[in-house]
Length: 181
Image 1 (cartoon, rainbow, N blue to C red):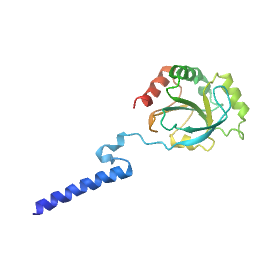
Image 2 (cartoon, helix red, strand yellow):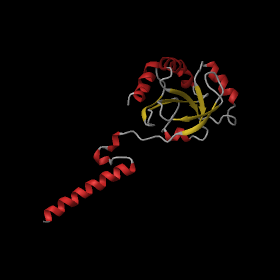
Image 3 (cartoon, rainbow, N blue to C red):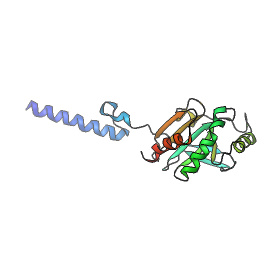
Image 4 (cartoon, rainbow, N blue to C red):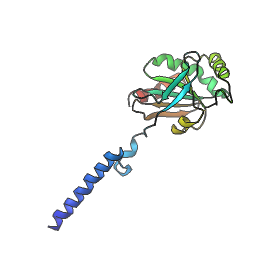
């Protein structure tokens, strides 16, 4: 009789543990749940009216769409050096992914929007630009320097994260990880 109670008790623990994983949206690390990248909570940022961009807002990462986010600053030499590779990657990917460059500079206060637009034109930018003046997205994505790249899949999980300059091939390969998770 005791053996039956023990087995019933163990089965109950298994059911409750599974229910807990479902209720909390994850599987405990001890059961292999740590392999899944963490879900990134979207944030809405103001956009900059520049070539390829528009005045308004954008939600990043985009809900239900792969998103590539390049963090840059106008004072960052490597950011300027990487612009041709970003432009080539953008051209190669077309509409497969939402392609956005984000500055953490305080646009309108520390740096004028005109300065951002002039820098963008000088370096042949032709895609969406957003401003993360609160550093909220920068923090959520664990960015630690400039330039930094993040590719987020359609479910909102980071699939590629790297800092420093990259070739167009490296950028396309990184973004590819978010297209086919």
